[in-house]
Length: 336
Image (tube, rainbow, N blue to C red; front, side, top):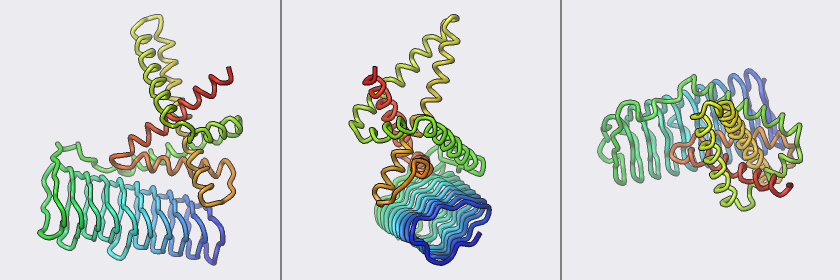
């Protein structure tokens, strides 16, 4: 599938082999076996594929989930990567920050902001104007590299840092073999895609059954988020404690198992609501009319990418789970 010419709207495309050579005056969301982007996009590019090649220009952010990524183009804001293997080539430029989780990462391009990420093998040979925070099984800093700020890294062994490559301080944190992320690999990329598909399907089914209820829960996300988060946290802790107490009694085992299954279902359900809210927020910000399934597909994708970010991903996951749970509790309580 080849897409060329000028598209004066957002583009949503899926297929086995996709090549985009034209100009898109909006966002692009693509999924396929192999996706190659050679054109120009004025807004965001979000891609899921086995192989991704980017040689064009993107006006805002790029978010990718891939088996392999070959980044040779320009992104004027942030680049977020979840991949097995990733190459940010020497000709590529990143106008914002670089965030990644990859099995093998070669960062040879230029980054105007900070770089943070984890991987089994990380090679830095490009220019990072800000700080670098890295977690690697093996870290290599090439003589051609340049880090304008501080370098903080965790690895089993201290890396050789060529003189003059780091403008700020260098902090080394030693981790035993296996502490550093050894890369998500092909299996984990497949697992990530599986989670995305499952969450999306669950969301589509629930929206089809309770469209008004889901929309109301998503809209309530921005209302008293701290109160909803603490309530959701309390409910989840209480449910786990209750399940544990029941499991230690012979009579209560079936009920305890049932509660655990309900907890697992709630974890998925809550993230669907958060994903729907994220999609609504983004479409509202760009002033684009959308349907609920558009909002869900985009929002869940972004939520999972954010949940995989180093350092802050766990916090995103907790917020995405407990706020909807708390809001659901208050919504149900008010109807009784």
